[in-house]
Length: 70
Image (cartoon, rainbow, N blue to C red; front, side, top):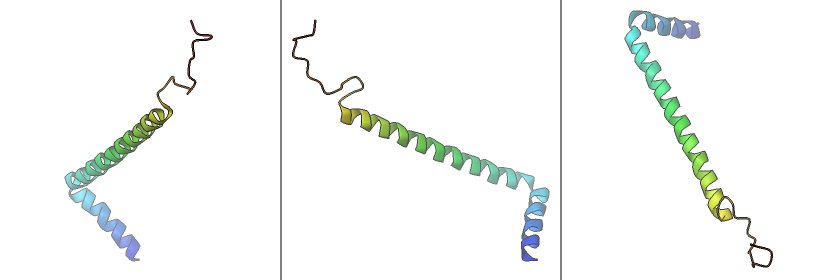
């Protein structure tokens, strides 16, 4: 029965004070957006580091001796 009481209280809190609920909702959305932004930044940094380790985007590690080059 305690679960129903908690739910009822939460609903009534939102009905009686919608601005408080909206503020909580906006704060949660802001946290989620920031978390997604940090995750995206981390993935970009991983990719950038991976490219750096390989020596660049177009570098395959082969040395051009000039024998077949133009």
